[in-house]
Image (cartoon, rainbow, N blue to C red; front, top):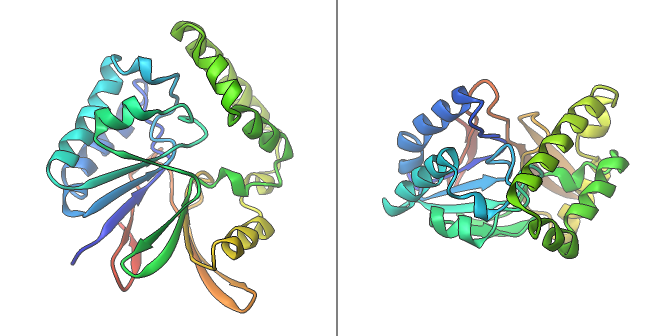
Length: 238
């Protein structure tokens, strides 16, 4: 039966060989059976800019996706908080289409809203201030003008600081905010919602203004692959 697959939060990097092995298995077994593969952010653990495409590890990932696309599976890429700087050069290398966040699609007759998910974590005000800064076009332009090595060093510092700060944060504020979810679904006509980011895979039902909306949360790939398969009549986790 025709279906599409949704994944997020793979956090692929050269120092995480297990995740890469799981990705390779997925991309050669499950993914070719799908009409489309939607990657909803954080494919990479970090992305300093498309001028890093020559990195051998990154080239392996893009080659795998390009091979999948050449065999008929459409690929859609959405930015995450870790790989926000993915650009058209990367998309071209993967033969993929970049999606805005959020993106509303018609999924086998069901309106479906796709998001990385971090925009919904409004309880973490400190993160939202940071998110607004790095999404600013001028900030991105100035950052990408710096040498690649300097950008990578800066990103490494950010990651270390972020990991330290998470230890002192209430886990609840790093999850999505119900009011933010309701506002987003209301704005887009009460569709189904699929997102990642929180690393809390699950299926949720929301009642908003008398409308029943389902929300699917994709899991991360820290220990094993996690994918959502959607057909015309249902969605289910692989």
